[in-house]
Each structure stands twice: as structure tokens, then as C-alpha cells.
Image: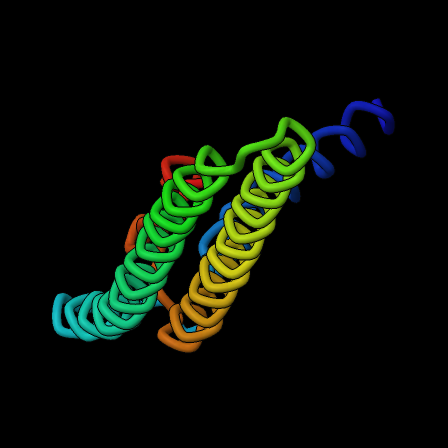
Length: 147
């Protein structure tokens, strides 16, 4: 009988305490409760998204321009290579053209990765400062970003 009473008290205690913990556990301690609070948080995250997207737009533009320039330079270098009169000179010029192209594209990729990482990092910091409630951010879509 004592075990049954003790067990019942434990179950009752859990039933009373668990909902209290569930109510206080939110994404952020200062979670929005009114429509105006939620709208303010959405607006705050929206501003952070706008800054992130502007940085990404500029970064991808810079990346594509750098890759386009690398192709143009390679075209010019290969065109010049095929004006050589010996196989040895041709081989040297072709090797140099492709090496310069690979280096330029590698640099463009590195710069893009840095820009992308920085933009997302700054966004996360800014968005966290907004103390958004669940579902207010689009961060779950990062896998769709151009790698």
C-alpha cells in the first residue's frame, strides 16, 4: 500500500510539474506573446535577411565576374599559345594558360566561400539578437545555397 501511494505521488508530481516546465521552455526566454511582439520580431529578422541577401548577391556577382574573367584570360592565352611555332613553346604556353585559369577559379571559389560564410554568420548573430520564436527564420534552407 505504501508503494502504491508513493508511486501515485510521483506520477502526480510529474503530471503537475511537467506542464510547468513545458510552458517556460521556449526558443528564447523573452518569446513573443502578442501579435505586435511577433510582428516586431519578424521585422527584425527580415532586416537581417535583407542584409544577408545583399551581401550574398554582391558576393555571387563578384564570383561570377571573376570566373568569367578567368575564362576570357584563358581564351586569350590559348589563342596566343596556338600561334607558337614549336611544340615545346606550345606546350609551355598551354600549361601556363590552364594553370592561370585554375588559380583564378580557385581564388574566386575561396573568396565566394568566405563571403557566403561571413554573410550567414553575421545573419545568425543579427537574427539571434531579434530573439525570434520558432519558424521566423529561413535558416533551414542553407543547403540550397550555391556551394
